[in-house]
Length: 82
Image (tube, rainbow, N blue to C red):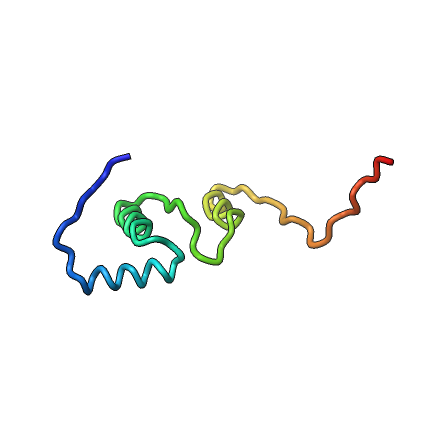
């Protein structure tokens, strides 16, 4: 992956980015990466806070007509092999 160095960022901007990163459960570097991905129009890699992998996968495929059945709320009893 490429590296990018940005110099002379105001302290107030850095503080706001840190606060935003904490809100999203990311590091400062991770938050800046996500902001750059969104600005470049790339698909976000990390799900938003409070969302699981299934929700993320659903967001990728919902517009192409793939419908998945949700997992059942109750699971069957495990098989007894004895």
